[in-house]
Length: 276
Image (cartoon, rainbow, N blue to C red; front, side, top):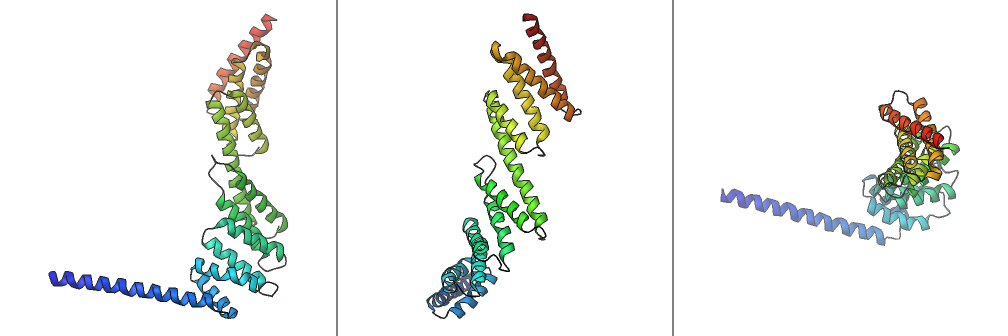
């Protein structure tokens, strides 16, 4: 057993040593490539490294080759591989930047259409969670919509539309969360504004029923808690919202609760009329 254990240790150390030597050798080979002034050699090695999935090393070479091949027939291809290498490293900000540079500097390139799409796709991948600021999400939507407008026959149109729908839903959900936050804090006036804007900006959202019910609820609570000078006006607005919700979602699971608001509002409005 002892001899077997020693043998296994020797084999393990031998393997690790071999691996270490291979790494050192690989680093040495790459440094030689970096130092080389044979740019055709570097160009071929950059492609090999990219194809092998070694995006960080490939990116180092493409970074230098961008300036070397500027103004040549390979310039767009170098930009393309540089952008793709950044994308492979998941640096979507820089990848998007170079894809954008490619499509602007080489609008007739064979890579222009894909680059236009990738600008939007990189923004899409960088889009944060709904609770965070959504400026990048809007940039993704704008870039993908521009791609659709410029390339109406592209095979990527379906995917671009799918991504836009997903991104728009994220913006709606952000708006929904903002409205809900105002609602939870008891700031019903701000909740009404946020939810109204959400429905106006995204009328076809899959959250529409939930947003409309929350808007009804916020208007109702704003009305019943208002000062007397504004109560009647706000009660009427809540009543209008009830009719809108009932007309669009008569079978909603929230209809029973909505009916309670309706009865309270109409009762209070009759009371207001009697006071007059």
